[in-house]
Image (cartoon, rainbow, N blue to C red):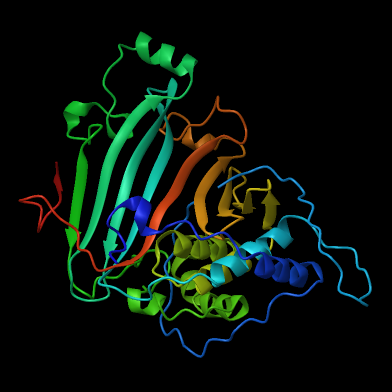
Length: 373
């Protein structure tokens, strides 16, 4: 069976949960105990880079009823979003997915909110497909610009008054060589030595094979990742001894970055859900359909959220939600003055992720260099 023949077929929705398994999971959670977690014997010998991305939903307490066992003492069930997170994590950990293939492929839809001409807001939407390989096969990043459109009727009116110019990538003038709606950018690269996360703020990179060896226990996973903290701290500490971010903020950024991009197993994904929920400052929210693990960044301007489908355990989206505008961004594309609080200013929606033996198809002339078609 070809795993990525169509996006809708790549990662099919999980079958409806078996009622007995669902009841067992809920009973275990509501009786105050997590499932036993496996300890991984795999070691993780290099350190991680980081990526910051994000998500938001409202908090609603969900009532769950569990029938007591015969002869058992009746206990007050521990209901709420955290209990739902445990259920979702168990469902994810129990998923069966291909464990290898020629490529790890992710398909996402990304929406960025931008302020154009210091006047009106637009949403830029693009479809991104990343083909990654643990061998010497070519790597390819595809990005198709779906559109750039004013957000509200007031934004539309301001855009018309400004001349109704065509909006391209970043809200820029299309004559400047930026992507037009409908165009696709192809960026090929090659070689197994190319690192997956760039050697930027951390001081060490992680390739695909090393991602695949991450432990699937949240405590062990946290310990492995924190082993990279001293290198990050030494590399990024500012003059005067002040680090650019706290250890907890760094751990959150690393964890969400791995969820966003890395070739990891369902069990490691579940461990990351739990690890992120235990990062100091994190909150678990729920609306009955989704569970959101959220944490405000230390600058106080952005709330970073990870949204999980409660029924399947799948990662649905990562969003950045506005807490208040950053005065240092005044006059820029990310000057969010005028937007309501809790506006979603950046969103990554996950359409598909997993291993496939299908290879990317590049247009003629795009095999060795960046091109636009």
